[in-house]
Each structure stands twice: as structure tokens, then as C-alpha cells.
Length: 105
Image (cartoon, rainbow, N blue to C red; front, side, top):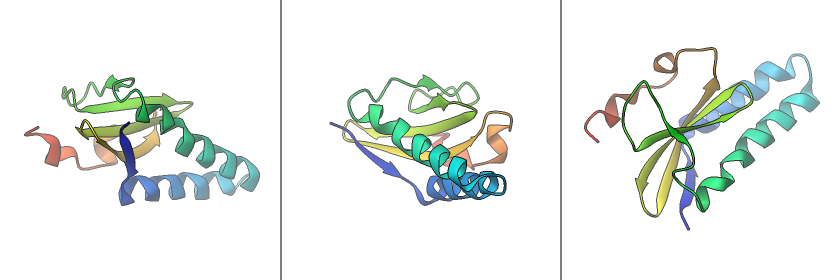
């Protein structure tokens, strides 16, 4: 089983998403954040279930789509996956996270 680790950046993304939605509905904000957080549970048993992020053409950087959000993760090895960012599908991914550290993978 793979260990899924939420990076500080991804946790901050969830917080920001929740804060934004909470301006209209605290209940919906909490529900959305919970669903996003739990949606990565499938990676523990199926780490390659997400598709490769087309912007980076790197098999180790993959994404799950959940509603209007892209959950981008990095397969570190057979035992570990890092969730690196969560963002709205309508935004360009390059504007949300510095992926330059993955260019040599």
C-alpha cells in the first residue's frame, strides 16, 4: 500500500478553497474540502489511476479530477505519493505551483 502525503502547499490550497467557498456557504465549504481530501484515498491501492498531467509530460506527475478541481500528485516511489497542489480546473496549472523541481525526473 502506498502512503499518500499532503504537502504543505496542497493543504494551503484546500484551506484557500474552503475560505473562498465559505464566503457563500460554510457548510458547502466544509463538504467540498472533505470530499477533495478523501478523493485521494484511491491512490493508496491504485497510484496510477490518475492521468499524466499533459502540461508536464512526466509519468510521475499525475492528476485526479474531482468536480471543478485538479488534484496533482507526484509518485515518489512504490511506497509514497505526494499531493502537490489542488486547484480550480479553470486556472492555468503553471500559475498555482512551481513544478520546476520535477523537470529532471
